[in-house]
Length: 257
Ligand SMILES: C[S@@+](CC[C@H](N)C(=O)[O-])C[C@H]1O[C@@H](n2cnc3c(N)ncnc32)[C@H](O)[C@@H]1O
Image (cartoon, rainbow, N blue to C red; front, side, top):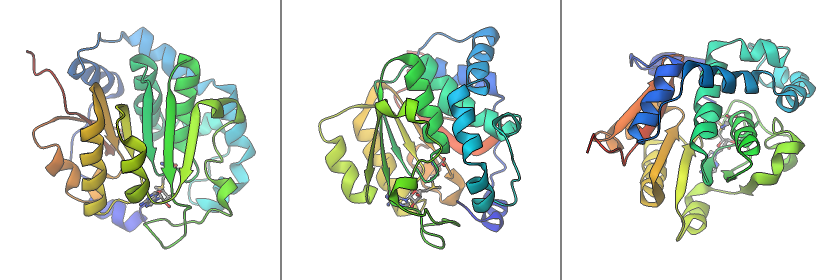
């Protein structure tokens, strides 16, 4: 979690794309057929009306209010009515629903808000797996402003029904990731762990090494360091207008060839 002050200082003046334009720009960069407004609307409706995600979220509202008292969101419907949440849905649900990744790797789970969306997408796809790596969140450490009560609490927003495609490994991604990714290709890599320059460079480089030809890299908190802009300076990158602190890179884009 980035503190409010840091967020204010670091939010980019970057202009992002509206949801549909973003989804289709990523699809084009990956040489995938574009999605119609109706298709994207249908996928967004799936997540807004997802009974498992809604029930899990609402069961945990008291905990969420403890963690983020400033948010005061009391239902899934209220949450998904916020533009930033729908932007998250475009990135972490709509895109994986369309692109059907076989393997997604994620660093940084904490409450599991994005993990839950990714797993809901894999569940509806009936295909694919998510491997997540996380160090238990501790307030005041690694840019977190709350602590998990215990290891079992990690990913508490992930419904039981969506856990069968999930492997969660606890520990430092610096040591775990290289071994876990050895000899494997990743279709979607999502960074949301340590946002220091060195660590972001490390994760992006590892993701690039293992990315499948039609793979994409998503990073939260791209404004925390210049790493995203530097590593992907020659790459097709995309930002959502309503969530511009998340960057999407498509390193193997065809450039029209
Ligand atoms: C911002 S939170 C993740 C939020 C989550 N993606 C979500 O959407 O709810 C960052 C998480 O990454 C973990 N973390 C930080 N550095 C890490 C590292 N080197 N390896 C693994 N996890 C790390 C933190 O402890 C915390 O649980």
